Amino acid sequence: MLNRTLEKTSLVEREAAKLFDKIGYLETSLKDVSKASKLSKGGIYHYFSNKHEILFSIINNYLDHLLEGLEDDLKKIDDLSSKIEFIVFRHLQMYNKKSPEAKATLIYSRNLPSKYFKIIAKKQKQYAQVLTDILEEFFKDADGIKKEKAKAISYSLFGMCNSIMYWYDPKGKVTLEELSRIIYDIFMKGVSGYRNHISAK
Image (cartoon, rainbow, N blue to C red; front, side):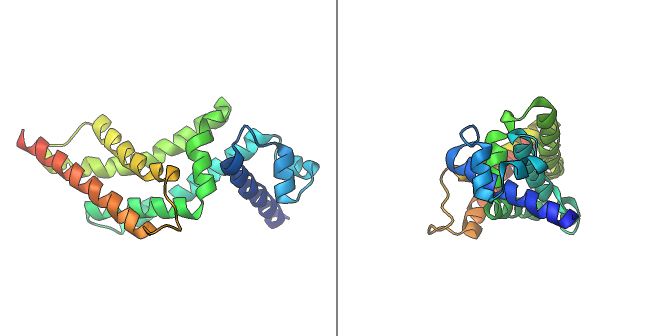
C-alpha cells in the first residue's frame, strides 16, 4: 500500500511539475493535473489537499534529492577545488535530471504559504551552507574572509548554475559536461583571483 501511495504521489508531482514548467504555476488547475496524471480529481485530493501541497511536495523532494549523500560524498574528496568542482557538476546533473522540479524550486517557491516556505528556505540554506563552508576553508590561506562574503560567493556560483534554466538546450551543441566545465573554470579563475587580491593586501 505504501509503495502504491508513493507511486501515485510521485506521478502527480511529476506531471504537475511539467505543467508548471509549461504553462505556469498560477495558470495550472487541479483539473489540469488530474488530466495529465490520469487520476480523477477525487484521486488527487486523496493524496493532496490543494495545489500548494503539490508544489511544496515537488520542491521539498527535489531539495532532499540535492542534499542526500552530498556531505558523505564530499568527505571522500580531499582537495578543496575538487570539492567545488564536484558540487558544480553534481548540481547541474541533478538539474538536468529533474529540470521541471528544479525550475519549480527556483521560480515558484515564493508562492508557497509561509509555513511551507520556511521549511523550503531552511533546506535551501542548508544546501548553500555546504559550499559556504568549503569556501571559508578555501580562503584560510589568504587570512580568511568573513562568513557573509563566503555566503555571497557561494550564492554567486549557484546563480551561475541556476541561470541555465533560461537559455540552456540539453539537445544543443554544448554538452552538460562541457557547460559544467565552463562554469567551474570561470568561477575558479575569478575566486582564485579574489583570493590572491586579499592575500596581497
